[in-house]
Amino acid sequence: MLDDLDSVLEEEQQSTADAPRQQNRGRAGRSAIAFFLSLVLLGLLVGGGWFAYSKVRGFFVADDYPGPGGAEAIVQVKTGQSATEIGNLLYQQKVVASAEAFVDAAKDNNRSKNIQAGWYKLRVEMKASDALALLLDPKSHWVVKVTLPEGLTYQQTFQKLSEATKIPVAEFQKAAKNPVALGLDESWFKRSDGKKADRTDIEGFLYPATYDLSPKADATEVLKEIIAHFNAEMEQLEFIPAVQKSRGGITPYQALIVASIAQAEALKDADMAKVSRVIYNRAYSDEFPCNCLGLDSTVNYWLRITGKKTKASEHLTQADLHNPKNPYNTHDKPGLPPGPIGNPGKAALKGAMSPTNNFPYFYFISIDTAGTMAYGKTAADHDKNRLIACQNGIPLC
Image 1 (tube, rainbow, N blue to C red):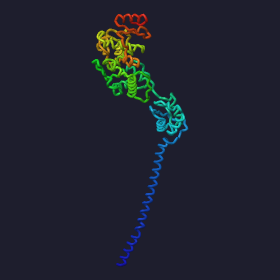
Image 2: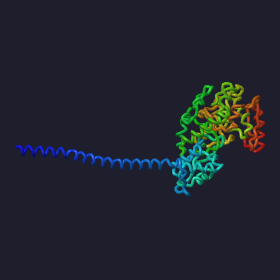
Image 3: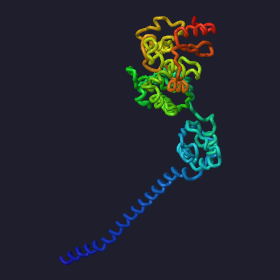
Image 4: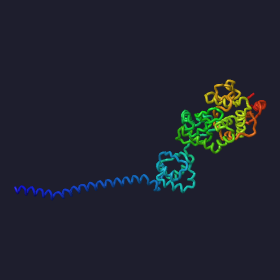
């Protein structure tokens, strides 16, 4: 019995003596695992750090590609961007090996401040100085250039824009249905003559100019740029305050209508203010029959926008001139038409906002093919001027 107990005690003592060794072995195993995991974690941290470093080192280290570059890269430089900002942009698009290399190249080139905003066709992995040279080369400036002459209707404008951008006319028509959403102030659509302006009519606001359009712009973006240009021109001309101050209750929208008519009727800039005065005299002086404008240009505008062919004045029929369904019939309907009949340029706008003073005329007519305008106070004066026009080869007689 005692022998058995001694055996048990010896086993317990042996177990007690072995326990520290087992614990030590457990701790050693855990330490090995921890050490291994630490190595793995350190590797990840080092690898991640190198990955992160590799992502940003191009912003700080002047690495440079030998060039000449490979695949095409389309880059947009925005207005006001510095050399550093452009360098960062080029680095992010893999055009240059580092932003610093581009900045250094820009510092060495006095023309670097001449980089224009716009889209450029470059190449990936270019030498920084070569990338700079392309940004300074007009041939690599990738824009869609389109010129909108004075007097185009919105339909003619959309057609020109479509030809230049390859965007379907239908997309411009859709985008144009809300001029206010395109950046036009809704206060433009106010009239003081009791007639309601159509807030969906973009006619008159598509400012004539040459535009450098983004090759990636959609119809809405293109029209927004044109409206922005219109707004800028109106502000520069001080068109709204000038009209409100001097035109005796005429709103800027009504003056815009007058400018569009003057643009359609006068060939020479010198006549814009005179023709505008005649239009105001007819519409608002109460000295002209029914205060009707009696103009063929407004009739032709209606024919054009309804898909019909326009006609020379001598070919317009009485049915054309006196069509009661034509809202632009100014031979029978008093005052100004519902809206502009085209998009006037600067000279016409100036003429409408500052028409010739002390000019008591009610008639005008082009008396030669050069567009020389003659004015008359009475119908008899107008008939005399018409005869002069006929003698000069204008087919009105």
